[in-house]
Image (cartoon, rainbow, N blue to C red; front, side, top):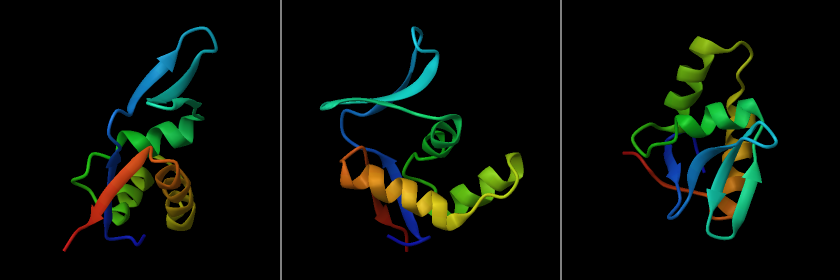
Length: 90
C-alpha cells in the first residue's frame, strides 16, 4: 500500500453511528467496529476516487498534524480485516 492507493469501503461495509454509545461506527458483514473521530474522518474520504496522498492533503486542510504514515497504518489494518479495499491509481 502506497500513497497512490485509492481506498474505498469494502463490499457490504458502510459508515454509521451508534446512538446508544454515541460514537461513529463502520458496519461490515462480520460485525461492527467502533471508530474514533479521526478514523471516521479518514473513512469519509475513502470513496475509491482519491489516493491516500489526496486524502492526507484533504484532511490536512481541516486538521493539524496529519501524518501519512498514520493514515496508511489505519487503512492497512482495515484492509487486513476486509473493511477497506482499493486499487493503485496510475
